Image 1: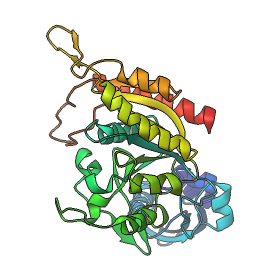
Image 2: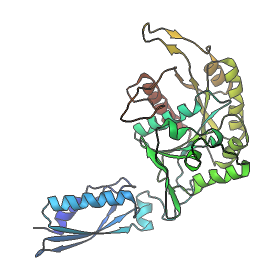
Image 3: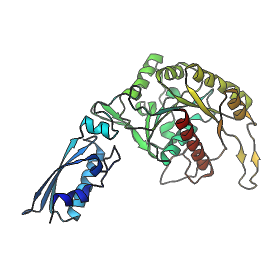
Image 4: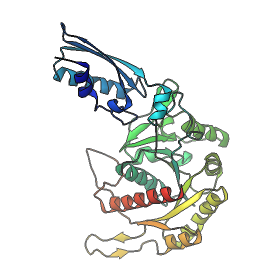
Length: 352
């Protein structure tokens, strides 16, 4: 025999898709109606967001669980949690505030380099994925407007959708992704001028439904041009990682990006030396193809730490989960990125 208590016990452990808390904790089960003669159960469920694909998935779970418990038919209505309830459980306000003015902003983590070709975007996507693997809620903005590559690197084939007045980012490997690459035709050049690009970047902060993020990674354009400077000035506070190769010249150029970060009151939490060496699979010996010492020298110059040294290696190929630049968690380089992500979390906690 169905009772209200039975229904709460059956559904109570289901989670609100966006608060990631069980319905029994959010008081999300608002009304229960039982018609014994028809063996029919109706429930009214309150969520942090309604009208989403996640709601549809939850609806199917509710129906299946109640039918498994013995109901012949099930009726469901959804409503929104009140603003007071949202605030109590750490949810977002219903009007979708900008990340730049949010009362609970994420840690903004900018990945910068002095020049192109040092693997900055590869570092950005792998740090983002590593943070997500450590249980963090992560988003990434591909702010390298002229050289966007994040969607391709992560093997993303979908495009964002618009729901109401908000843009829903694409999610891959637990990371929410927004890129200029979603809004141009394949391989079309971006010929916009600075002010237009600035408006697009503002849209990424103001009109995208990021949810409750712990970290927002920004893959900055290389160098110290207008777009990079605009982003530095736009962000209220930001942690920054500088990417270089071991070559002294690359480190010298990367120092300019670090100097710009310091002049805009951003905090450099470390340096990553990419392409640090090549390790032979046959002998295990290391060959320093691009020289040695650039990362250490740069870290000393910027008075920060060397977060890690990334070797020249290819990710494992996975035909079922194509992502040409993402290292798996058990790949030797993937383990290095996990160590870097743990250091990033420590530095963000210490200095936030």
